Length: 236
Image (tube, rainbow, N blue to C red; front, top):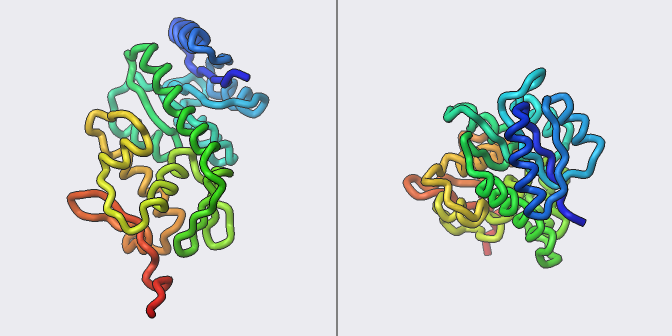
């Protein structure tokens, strides 16, 4: 069964262009022109990914993304924006978008980004059957699930992949560039802030005090490392 992509944009020419290229690449494509229609089609259909324009009538892409995540719908989102505005990009990522592209864009690059996001999702599904634990965090790679203090965590696909990679490299210093390559799999032209945004999200979900993190530590000038909380470290 082909992966099903929802393309959401109010410009018919862009919808036609993206639909043609995605279908040519073997995807099944649904379309929506408004945020309201996008929400309804997401609820009515099994989707593998959403290509979501930021500027939409009735309800913009930011609000669509927010509502989907609030309702626990974690389908990957590739956000499109005509604005080269850092705040819009960061806000979209903070609300749970997995990636973004700025218009004008190459349709071939959109297809490549879609494939990369789906490839990561499929890779996670095919991981070895195992469970990994650090402190109160338990990660189940085969189920794409994480538990914190006995409760299931609500994570976007990217947040899960980042958490899993940190857990798999417990105690190791990982540069932002390493994390970009490992989790996103392609160059972000030096924009390592996407890593910082996702780390911030994870901290909000696992740290008692985000100003004094016990799990995800910042290594100044380098990146991050995941550690066992001090009160969980057992002495001999």
